[in-house]
Amino acid sequence: MDLPSLLFFIFLDILAVNCQEKPQERIVGGYAPVPYSIKNMVSIQTILRQHICGGSLINKYWVITAAHCNIGVQKMMVVAGDYSLTIYEGTEQEILPQLLVPHPDYDSDTDNNDIMLIKLRAPVYLNNYVSVALLPRQDASIAEGRLCRVSGWGYTSATGGQIPSTLRTVKLPIVSTEKCNSSESFNGKITENMLCAGFSAGGKDACQGDSGGPLVCEGRVYGLVSWGTGCAEPQFPGVYTAVSKFRRWIDNTIFSYYSRCKNN
Image (cartoon, rainbow, N blue to C red; front, side, top):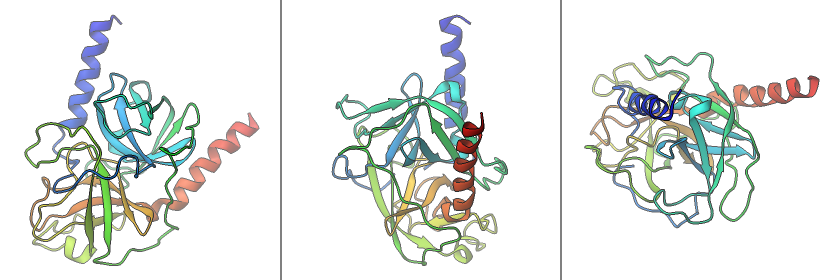
């Protein structure tokens, strides 16, 4: 395939990721954190270096993100140690993925099981700018009203506009599944594998481009930005993949990979 054709198909893939009605990746009402203070955050990009999703390093070889961020292993690049997407800072580490493992039961219609593991071709070098995230134990719960922090390079306005140049973050309270599933909100669409966070009045939320990024509660990644209705809408909090429902799957997937490698 010639270069113009390759670029055209990559462009179509980018549009497909960014223009789906569901899930809506949604940071609105947030602020720029201290540079390099969120060290486990990675930017998932196309090979043309266009940011599409966030993710978290869970060890030197593996990243956790949302399954709907899957654009194909040949078209993806992972960048760790970044803060500004528009400036080369000398802290970035660019690594190509070796393997994408979306959850086998991921449903793109309902957004259930929206989680994916990325195996990197080479290890990330852990330093003052890059570290790994902690995960909750299997089925651990987080209390309603607990303030958590979501971070990303997504849009800062519900109406879109420009991707922010630097990482953004915002603190949001956990919303009970009962309230999130009420007729005034998502009306039964929230499964046991999802987590809601946001303010009843709206105004603060994740937004397009934040998908797959971490919702950190009590120092652990309890959620991954998954979907929602618009960005920062009243009565419609952000919906996150509940990572604690998948801790066993995460551990088993990584263990199985290394077991296969050892036996080959």
